[in-house]
Length: 550
Image (cartoon, rainbow, N blue to C red; front, side, top):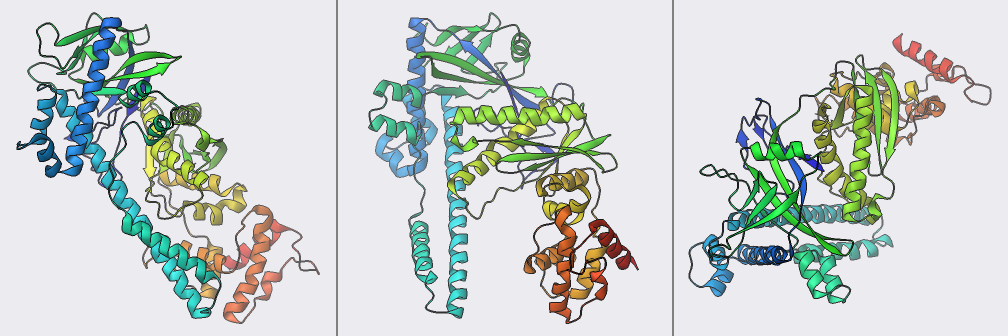
């Protein structure tokens, strides 16, 4: 099993810096002009090997799990509570590292423990800031709605519920604070309290891994965990007695993994994460080894076109576009009941679906274009949809990028604004597809460098209306006129743009123009029956196009 991960921060990304995240969420310090063995950008590959200790080795191995995670929990508490907690537990000492070294006999595992704890705490602070921003946005929205209703009717029945909602949000915002994490997850802790699992099983699942970040010092690739040529793994214990400092355990390497094992042995440095888990009632052990490999040269690029992808919370829409920007075919891949699965099954299911996306690109022989999405959600849907959105933005998009790079499919991100509206208002009559497929069509065209011109008929409509509705987009924006026509249609109650209805809605525009300009062009009634119905949609639309050009 191979996992490849390349991560680029969406806001702070710099083209000369490569950011890499390891399999176990350990962040490698960014290095400028980071290159692999062949001069190309490098990425991280993680290989999973099984390890098989005997009874005596298993006892010592479990001892490493226990001590490592015990020191990790103490290190987190020291970071979370600060110097007061450190002085109360350890007395007058200099640094956190000295405190942890005293617990584990100066073992180099402490460096990895500190790195992991600092990342955990930073992730909590980031979540806290996002939560505060989300609640503040909700409070502003509800307060604005209350003021609007009070201006119309101070005795409106809706005010009572809005006041209660505002009070609830204010209370949440007031009590919002940083809270310590629960090691082993809250669900596992609740199961232990309710007696669903034994104390021993709880400890095994809570203390399920230990790691050592690869550092090349004095020719040594990893200070604590080493892979040897005889297909064994050498683990440093916490004992200082002679003959007990190291634990050598046999490791399984099958014919498929042989190539990756040799790459690990020849790598400059590697990081190893040892994990344990229950499998069919038995305790199994695995070593996840991460090392650097050069990024593969893309085999499927954009010479013959592109595949556009539009992400949604329950499916993805794919569109196949040729090099001239013309639509060739389209496809959909649904996510099903993704929110009902457990963590492992959900990740496997998403991986399976992303493989389908990559296979579609390979079959068409083209690279993929996606939106450069920013996941700052300032509102909430129902619980089911929120879970699907969370799965999509935390797993699917990053996993798709890794799979594309691994299999040689070019991956490109484009500006996401107004893709759905442009597809809806410009191409719905031409292709008669859903809004999501039309959005993916616009994404593919944008990835190929095409610019979407504003249709002449909408210019004609806006020339009659003028600045009747103030657009949300600033002057000079390339999407200002798209915003104007969208706001006008929305204000007029025009929402559907299917082929069978688009001309019927065009005729409805005569009422919009009449309400704004107090005049009504008679030409909009062309080709209508005596009952005012359209008999030939295409004939009427072509007539309007000709009228507009003239």
